[in-house]
Length: 264
Image 1: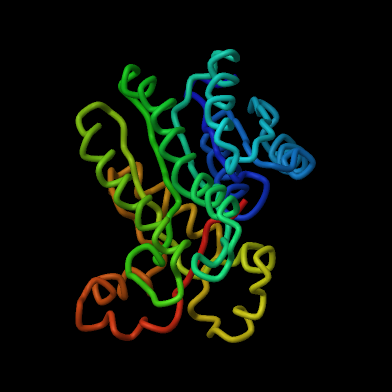
Image 2 (image 1 turned 30 degrees about the horizontal axis):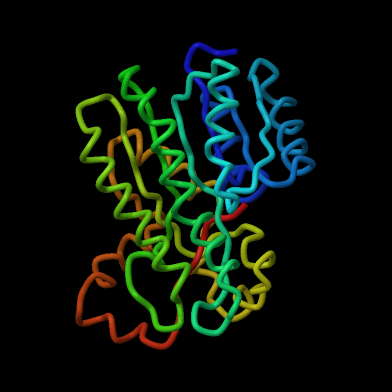
């Protein structure tokens, strides 16, 4: 156990979540890693323990599309008397098509994963940070949440909610020693697109639009430490972001999606 505290990371079995685990372990934080597949979490744990043998790593298998998952996660943290310094809400996925896919339960589960679970984990875990006068919360969003895009009726809107929630929370806890950021990556080199069956995107988009997970996570950690409510990662996307907010450029995205990220 370390004196710094622990970092709870959802979607920690791969991609940005696993990279958050690696970088926060290097900073000396204990880890609480959450994902659906315990075997993948064990692989991440073994790799980190080989480099940081003094780090305590707790694994929690949970599916955050299950409405009961956030409460169970919070209970396990409380029962183990784990003091959280970082909360990284990273779990996410591509989802069903709102107007084409008829199974409403699939939509409901997706919205639970992408919005409700994040909100509930903040609700259950942030009060202890406020009471301690120290804490960091990173909610992984996307540049897809920065502008409406024709055909993207689930992923982008859910990320827009995460951005708005993070901004509001940042203002709410300002002055209490707790920083909250929405991390907004663009195209990121992880297994997200392959898992979503969208691997062809890498073949059809220019390589200069893509950033590595290490850089995205490093900028996310740096941003929350500096108290930035919105962290757009990647120099290109930071340059594009003001343009995306302009009404004069919104017509460009009427019929197509823009970069998606966040992965479990």
